[in-house]
Amino acid sequence: MTIGDLTAVGQSIPQPERHSVEFALSLQYYLLHSFRYSGARTMLPLHGINVIEFAGLAPGPFVGMLLADFGAQVIRIDRPGSRSEDVLARSKRSLAVSLKSKEGISLVLKLIAKADVVIDPFRPGVLERLGLSPEAIDKASNGRTILARLTGFPRTGPWSDRAGHDINYLALSGVLSLFKPPESPTPVPPINLLADFAGGSLICVVGILLALLERLKSGKGQVVEADMVNGTRYLASFALLNSLPASGSPYFSKPVGQNVLDGGSPFYTTYACADGKFISVGALEPQFFAIFADIMVTSVPLSSDFKNLSMKTVQGDPRQWPLLKKYLSQAFLSKQRDEWTALFEHTDSCVAPILSLEESTNLWTKTSSTSDSSPSSRMPVVAPRLTRTPGKENLAVLYSSQSMVLQPGAHTSEILNHMGYSSKESEALFKTGVVEQSNIVSRASKL
Image 1: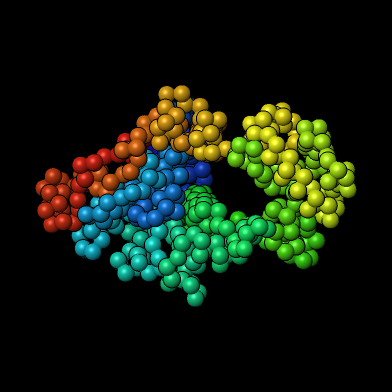
Image 2 (image 1 turned 90 degrees about the vertical axis):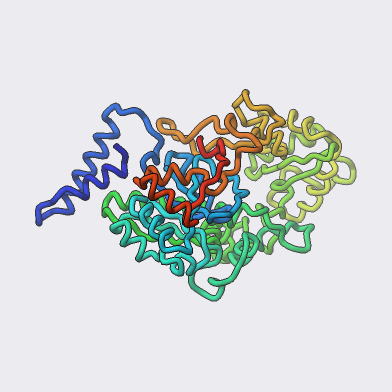
């Protein structure tokens, strides 16, 4: 029995007219806790949660993959005849179904009737035009399904109907303006991670989990509205609040490029080394800067060009920062990155090498059965790690460059069979083009 099953049990038992809600919730709480502590086999934390994900671009698929990594059963809805390059398909199954036919919509609504979560990655109005509005989903699921809607721009307002990408959402959030290195004439976007995946996907997942928790109390689903502009702004609360004049903060109250954390300070930035590799310095606290400065000066003594540089007072004196930046830039160029790494090793100097993806993999990946030359060797570990019910592990072992992508319709027959369609009924759906089956099945979908 799963959490979803227990919730349904608590809601289906007839209740007395008085205190019916309290009784249902008490029974649900008892069943959940009895199941948790009954000695049953440990399951992944989202085991029993059924998710329907409409195929989309990267942020939506990442929401589904994260839920799947922690045990949710995720079915991706694809268009017949389409191809996929989505590598964020781990542990999912694919149903290729036409959303332009009444039969296809009817089939999807049957799936939604038993779903806990529906992921909508489309621009505003798409689901409504298909006949899959929040009201239709609510009716199909008897009010239990959580509809998670992820957009780039806010769903309402002057930008709601426009196309865009991470860089545009980041731009409108105000956060992109903070990514302007002093030496750059324009802001530099941190690839498509911040708005797409942090302000978008992760904020959406938080909303889904909150809605699932709330449903245990009310028995009702709800709509989770997540957009990447507001999600990114919320994620940047530390920077935005510190940028207010009233904060008096040294972090973001000055113009971009002149603050402690945005490249303005020489003790919180990056430097090039003799071998063309790079190193990061984050010696903010006085005690850590003292250790950092001592190692630097011991390794590369201050020349007469830096006679006016005082390592004891430079942190609190921005007038000396340009001179310190010049010294550190020259000093780091005197040794290779790994030589500097060795010098700072086992110290609280807040210095770390900037690793390539390959180097980072070699440092953090514990799986020895995967070749370092394999594309799958870059597979990150599922995070966070729960001590009793962690997410799926050893994912890289079953990956290969040919098996990362889940092709549309790879599990159509299997899903129809599971839904209770007879062979004759399934055959009719295939013949009329309502559904489609792919012969290519990704190993990743089996994880």
